[in-house]
Amino acid sequence: MRIIPAALLAMAFSLPIAATAEAASILGSWQGRGSVRVKDSGQVEPVSCSVRYEEGTGRTFVLNATCATTAGTFQQSGRIVKRGSNSYSGRLYSDQYAVSGNVSISVSGKSQTIRVNSPKGSGSLKLRKR
Image (cartoon, rainbow, N blue to C red; front, side):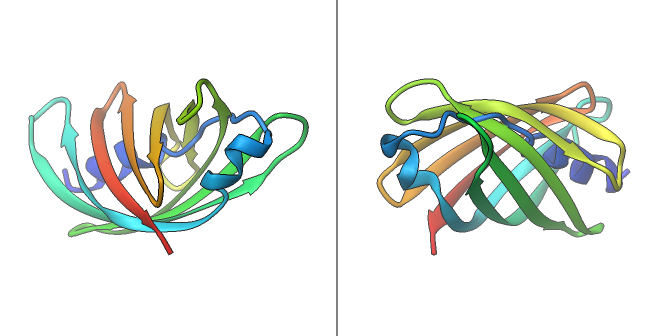
């Protein structure tokens, strides 16, 4: 069941974001660690991720992430939208696991907290800007 935590995190990285001067702080590369919890079993597993945010079309930002658990490495992508001065939300998708989910991001300077929720589980990460 170690593949399921990866699928959960994959869902957490698909979000839409508003492109404004204030959003510039989220652009670029971030990396860090966290954990995922599998909904069915309650199993918690550590995860590490590298995330890159780029400007999308209109008022959106594109998110691409590579994450690793003890089960292996997986890719996810998504779009996020700026919801407040330091908060973003959106959707993540993993082609590898065919799973999607909601993601919320809170940025504070050069650090951010990401929370992901999907039908298969949930996760949280603390990232630092590279």
